[in-house]
Length: 91
Image 1 (cartoon, rainbow, N blue to C red):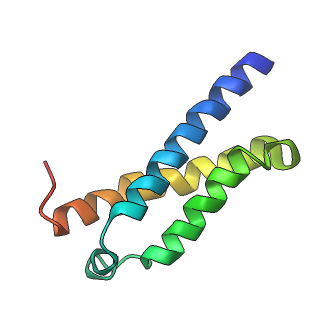
Image 2 (cartoon, rainbow, N blue to C red):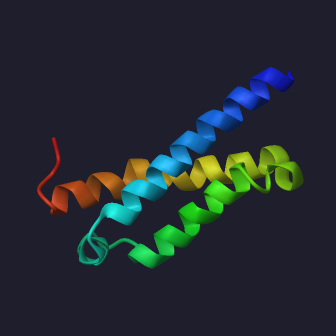
C-alpha cells in the first residue's frame, strides 16, 4: 500500500508542478479574456497544491493529495485550453 501511495503522490506532484509552471508562463490578460480567475489567484491555488502534495503531505495525507489533484486537474482541463485558444496556441 505504501508504494502505491508514493507513486500516486509523485504523479500528483508532477501534475501540480506542471500546472503551476504553465500558469506562471501565461500572460495575465489572457486569464481575464478567458473569463477565468486571475493569474495571481491561480498561482496561489496551484502553489498551495504543490505545497499540499510535497511539504504538507505528512499532515494532510490522502486528503491533501485529492485536493491538489482536483486543483491541478481543473486548471489543466478547463483553464489551460482556454488560455491556449485565446493566445492562438491551441492545437
